[in-house]
Structures are given as structure tokens and as C-alpha cells.
Length: 193
Image (cartoon, rainbow, N blue to C red; front, side, top):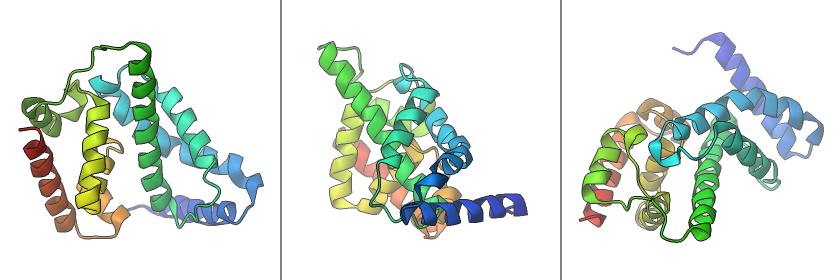
């Protein structure tokens, strides 16, 4: 059950996002203030991961907000839409960070994704070291086959969303999310065999 404070907060954010999309840049500071805890939660989920240990939550959040504020053409529908886009942006921030890092130190220490590592990652993403760039590449390939399944992985891995949160964000049933998650896990594991 969602309390009234959260509903009011979401309603206020939804209205402000709509105004921001319409060009009212003066509300950007207040909007960032309201959304910061939500973006921080998504970014912090990544910092718990051993794979993203080199990044700082504040670094991810700052870069994500810069990139999100540059999204002048997005018609922000509501808070859920904003957070879904934020998960994608955070994915790009992390992947870009690792691309830069790897280009600076060829032959780096990232551990390639293997079937075992992927199975461990699916069970406990916070405690598995792997190559973010490989995961990003796999997600791009999965997206070509099944956009919804790729989105579920992205929300779970990069956004830390639960099945009910994903269902609400994507406006589908929890069983649909579960099916997409099962397909995505199977497909990822198959690609690593």
C-alpha cells in the first residue's frame, strides 16, 4: 500500500516534470532536489556491486543528472518514466566509465563473463565481479531480440527495481515481468555457453 505522502510527492514530481518538459527551466533546481533521493538509490544499488566498486555514488548521480538535464526533447510523462530513463542513463554512465578506464589501462583486471559468473550474478548481483562492457554488449543484443526482456534486465541490474516496481513502471503485470526475466536469464546464460 502506498501512503498519501508518496502519492503527493509523485503527483508533484509528475507536474514539475511536465512543466520542465514544456521549457520551464526555473523549476529544474527544485525538481533535482525532489528526485535526488530516487536517483541516489538507483546509483547506490550499483555501488554495492563489486563490479562497480571503483565508482562513487555521488559521481554517478552527478553525471546522471547532467545527462538527464541535457534531455531537452524528452516529454517526461511522470516520475516512473523519469526513473526508467534514469536507469538507462546510469547504465550509460557506468559503461562509459569502464570504457574510459579500459582504454587507459589496456589488459585490465575485469573478469570476463562466463556461464558460472552469470549464474552467480543472477543470484547475487552485488557480490559478483564481471566485465560491464560485456554485459552492456549482451544487453544490446538482447534488446534487438526482445526489448521488454532487455528492459527488465536493465531495470533489475542497473536500477535495482523489484518485480512489482518494474511491473508498475512498465505498466504490465508482475507475471509478464517474471516471464521476461526468466527469458532474459535463459538467453544470457545460453549466450555464455
